[in-house]
Amino acid sequence: MVPVSDPVTLALPASVRVETLRVRRSFSTVLSSCSWEHHAGVPAWLVGENGAGKSSLLRVLAGRARAAGGAVRRTAPAGRTLSPLYFHPSIRLPREATVRDWLRLTKTFLEGAPPLDEPLAPDLAPDRRLETLSTGEAKRLLLAALLRRDSPFLFLDEPYDHLSDEARAALTAILVRRARHDVVVVATNQPIPPEAMGPVVRLDGNTATIHTHAEAAR
Amino acid sequence: MRILPAAVTAIADFELRRRLRSRASLVGAIGFLLVLAAGHYLYWTAPPPRPEDSRLFGDAFALFIIAAAHLGISDDRMHGVDTFLVGNLVSPARYVAGKILGAFAFLVILTAGAAVVAAALSLGDIAYATWYPLQYALMAWMCVPLLLLVELVMETRNAGAVVLILFFTTLFTLVHFHGAVRVTTWFGLRTTPMEFGSLGPLAMRALGSSALLLLLYPVCRWRLGRAVPR
Image (cartoon, rainbow over all chains, first blue to last red; front, side):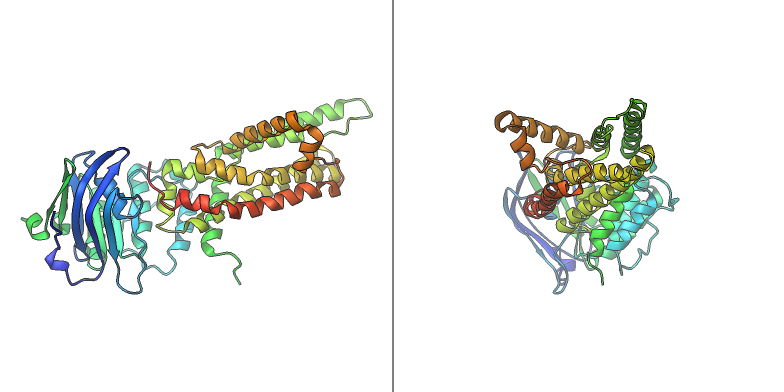
């Protein structure tokens, strides 16, 4: 497969490039060979049926799993950390803690980070135990902390599931803004928000079909 | 001047608050109180001269450990919390250091609380109320490297119970082959009640366990470096 570059964003420095990538999940190959390059500018989307290998590919892109073959190269502008941010839908908040405990913890790691422009974090009573939050509330709390963190790479697996329309809109706005300078790759089964359209990697039958931003927009 | 990185103390603080709010700690505390109260009831109702034993302190402490002792690493892994924290927000080293510091702080609180309860039930027998909590706290800290290993390898919320089983299985197996005197000497368990100097060997081993935690860091790094969702 020929490497494809998104022409709109080619000039921007943060990028992720995969070369003849082979991805396995347990003992089966979910992606036999994929070459692709994506630059900051607009979010990229991984789509496909359940079990097609979106999450497995995203884990490899984020450096959370090893590729069975090929290479992933992440390039960041000078002076920026290479450490990517990663979100998976199975992540849960610690049950016994309260909202206040969680906010106190994340505040330490987000010292100096600017607040999000969109209201993604839900308005919750500080004494509420995290185990009593709905799936959507917990997810918004997690995403709100993650998205304040600076990194040139953001890999999100199913971030839209369980979110209200308002939270989805806020997340989309954040991702679009963030993607101007950072590589943002989102794996999803949900409809891609038109305002966040970018290159689409469709996984099906061990192969990846790559649609450029212009193709996907059509 | 800050001695520890803010990330380490933040993780430790969070872990401690989690631990203090958990139902397991509440169950452990109630169990501890009931068993120690029973031990003292038997002690105070026994005809003089009363037996100079622990008044079920060891049993009460072990019950608490079974119910509530864990570092939280395995629990985090089961819920993907480590996937979120490690890599995204904090390095594996600081995460593990925070967990261990949190466990240490919890042990200090537990020991202090146990001493207060023991002092009350023994009607102010300070030697008793400090010696036994100190002995069991040192034993517990000696087992922390094993606790860390268990949590890195197993998916469990009851790592304390697993460690207790492993510890006593090892102890009884060794005693079978080498005799009780040699084995208790190896582990620093040959102590004399109320003689604080006799806790020296145990204290040295507990200190050695802290050093062993550093040696276990590569295992932690390997396990957490690629924290992936289940």
